[in-house]
Length: 385
Image (cartoon, rainbow, N blue to C red; front, side, top):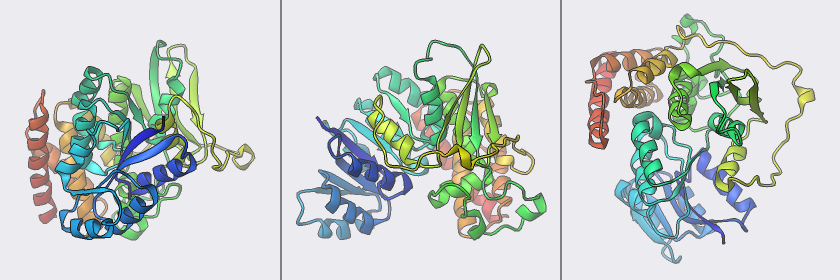
């Protein structure tokens, strides 16, 4: 039986690479549903190639275009966020790959978990915003959450067969992004174009900016906290510019296990989709002779304040990580529109964390309210910048 997949965010970086994995293993996987936000033309191309049962375009204005283009295919076409949350619950689906960007991933991921679908999670914001709620729901429904981020996949692989052994800490590696060596003064003048040029990874615009500001690593720390049941103090971030070691686990006896490979997202995608199997891949192999030196350094939390904000939000808990995410989404969008500078993103986030109401035990409705409140505060901060 082929595994039936719903790929949320199929036109993004992770979604397109996931479809490549599917194309390389047609005997193992079949696409049941595809969803996209804006890229109607690419979604249409994917529907013709992979012949899903259903497609959803989040932007309802683009529904007529998609519906008309696919009218000669036996495929159901819907539009809007409600449709995405509904399609993941369809009975034939075995696994949902959540590759949406940002807060938008939370609702359909929760809907899929409630429907008992295995989750391949590439949307770190789902656990950043509502980690306690999502993990509790997954346990209640006995649903596995398989990480797709390269760092969390590395940790998951290191822990395979070691689940009963106590973990002292995990070490999340970070490339350091394009501005690792820049001074504060230089960071104040970096451009959007410079920030979008990541040295090692090819990602979407929002994730690339998060990597440049190191917010991405802060989000990954919060995600790791929930995925692996750790305190923030048990999670260390190390800058590793070569991006060969994707992350490490240090056990109670002092042994450290690491997962290594070339920077290629298809490996963790395939690992999540096929788990517990490892699939044959034609991807580039790691050639150790090309890496005479692997280097590591502590991140500078004064230059990259977003990482410090993430640890602070994780320690406070409650709805603070939700506030952090909402403020960051507003700040990154403003930077991409060139309304604010690179360092001003951190200022917007700091102001939002200081002003948003704190809730120690939020329910889902509280997260929705918090997200809206934090966005309003952040947008006001952008206007005043």
